Amino acid sequence: MNKGKRVLLIVSGGIAAYKSLELIRLLKGRGHAVRCILTRAGSRFVTPLSMSSLSEDRVYEDLFSLTDESEMGHIQLSRDADLLLVAPASADILAKMRTGLADDLATTALLATDKPVMVAPAMNVRMWEHPATQENLAVLEQRGVLRVGPDEGDMACGEWGYGRMAEPQAIADAVDRFFQSSRRLAGKRAVVTSGPTVEAIDPVRYIANRSSGRQGHAIAKALADQGAETVLVTGPTALPDPSGVEVIHVGSAVEMLAACEQALPADIVVCAAAVSDWRVSEQPDQKIKKNGTVPSLLLVENPDILATLSKPGNDRAKLVIGFAAETTDVIANATAKRGKKGCDWILANDVSPGTGTFGGDSNTIHLIDAHGVEDWPTMSKEAVGARLAQKIAETLTREQ
Ligand code: C5P
Image (cartoon, rainbow, N blue to C red; front, top):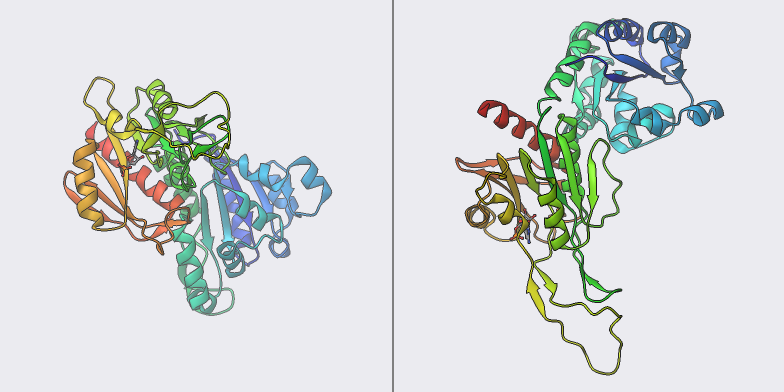
């Protein structure tokens, strides 16, 4: 079902901005709600009045306008959208997106969003071909930003080449294709673990680890974006709860396992949490006093959540996926781990010091299944989530 999606259309500066009026008309005609942000440069080419007449909504223009901020802040604008579409996307706005500059309403909304973003670049051929633009786009695409166009053709500046914005029809088609492909897990249920676990020593102290939860949270969000009813069982992290996901906050590994079992049955289980291998066997009710002797802690092994959820049985999910954080012999160790845990896929990654994976922004994945190894390029944890959700959708739809 493709109707009723909400598109936040950002119109930046460029002669192609006039085509955005046609784009609004097409998107509205296909049943989407369109809300518009017009940049200062964009307003030199089209008027807010013509945009608001076509979108049947007011047009948002200035970050520092008190009215805009009180009625509808940049956060709310992106929160209310299913897709942020930048058309035309000038070389300037692409550079700002790449570096994370946020000096107006459009760029702030783009920086503040956790929603999918699509860009339709439009610029002079030399600006398009400039290594800066190409590099900016490559980085944005690696982060999961979708692109449509540009086309080749003659330009307003009199030159010929790539840089002309894709036709509104092609952009509207790409938007529809995105919405179709992004609902491929509708009707499926997913359980994802994320973050560290914390194992109490006494009422105030605990054993934990450095997991940020970024990868697990990104996977939960990507599965939800694909339409899966998603439960995220997470240990304590500094991250906000991802939108569109049911989040269960837990502390210990035992609590995490119980919450996962409660969330079953599911079609998909992804164990991305860095579960503590051990817990303190018995915790006193009171804080352990410092009294000159050093206490010793008796540790017992925690349940293996991934292995437990991988066990054959009626409740077993169709796809159970685990991670293998390795520092040596990544593929061999991860392949052995897949057999030991009994899961379907293992996402192996090298977490040696210097790779920056643990707690960092990006990840280099080797996906191991029954058929072999698939090497993924280094990408952001969000892009890993999106690619994994895509692969899960392909696999489950093939098996149906
Ligand atoms: O055994 P190891 O910790 O290397 O395995 C990693 C994989 O197993 C991850 O997917 C992790 O989420 C999962 N795991 C688990 N419960 C544990 C230990 C690990 O679910 N107690």
